[in-house]
Length: 490
Ligand code: NAP
Ligand code: MG
Image (cartoon, rainbow, N blue to C red; front, top):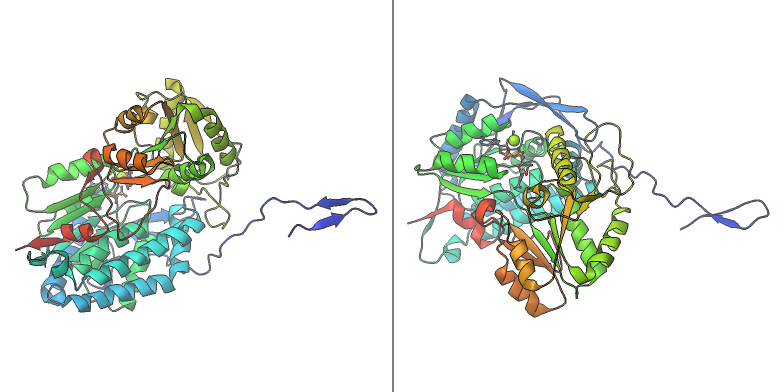
């Protein structure tokens, strides 16, 4: 309700309408000063540690382990022992009970997890609260349902677990990526060694608490923190049967080379440079919301982000005008404030990468637009950015920026839209905005992307498979398809 202040004897004056700060309390999270490695159900004291920080103010949060190859070996041995000692032979209905319990506890403790996710990773609390946490719990619920139905999922093929899975995840959706990896692996009867990203280890470490709470047998899930060296030690380990990796195309390729000729199974979920295609018959205001959600959600740290906007020429002017106006209303700042739309960039390294690519866009001749915006003094921040006048050859139209930066291109005909959209080495996702159902279907068929959204963007559901073409990787996560990488067939 607007409060009307009355000047003495004068007309009513509207009160200040700007947002007041609405910070979520940090008190729900109890941080320890120091975390060990979670191996065989116990906390192992790490030999080396590093400090994990909050990207919003660069303050230190905790000391965490930098696992060495010997410590990774201990984790793999614990996983092997748990696999042999009964987890793999447990009836599916029994495994399902653990997964259901994990899902329930994640729901019960979702506020604690959401605050910690925003604190350590920089994403707005409204996203970790309304997207990351509900989806992580939903993943465990969904795969709990499959655990006793594998025979029906793959009739006459006698599915068996693969063994010990080594799982390496990135920093953009730390807990959600953990759920995408661990839920199907356990549902299929595997055991796991998981390495979170260097910059965002804390929700994975809190998750170990949940594992104890649900009394998951020791060694079924092991968490080793550390940087790329820890990941490399896990990939190299002889007794790992499967590697599941989500991250950069560069590291993904290196892993694929490393595993060539070995018996290890591999899935790769890598980068993207998705086209979001807006036809002139689309509902423009709705499309603008979809564009904003497509590229500024999670600061653009999204592998399937709609980072290339393809606009039909006839609606270019009004659409860009609406988009710029909408950008002015985005609130950038404190990730723990419930009104924040765009939070902190995840790390100094990522901020440098975004800054460098944006500079290249300006130098190559694109026109930059950034709304007026006051950024906090400490921490890592980047103003939501739109580039117009972009040629297909520019780096900002080719390379994954992984930040809140949109490149706008135009097209005249559907054929031209398809050609431009597919002019990329990636193929993870795409979006189509149009009123015509037939056009949606024909575009979905011609766009070379693992996921094509129609009149929406960045929608996820555990029942729906997700994954890429070409340099975006191979293998699917989610849905019945997501079981297959964790099974061998007799
Ligand atoms: P990254 O290095 O590929 O990180 C992904 C995961 O792999 C992290 O846990 C990482 O550890 C680990 N890792 C690094 N080197 C490894 C190696 N040689 N062997 C095994 N594991 C290794 O990605 P990044 O450096 O965080 O980000 C770089 C770029 O990758 C981003 O700018 C973005 O374009 C892209 N990216 C894509 C996704 C995606 O979802 N597709 C996610 C994140 C990043 P550290 O955390 O210590 O590096
Ligand atoms: Mg890295």
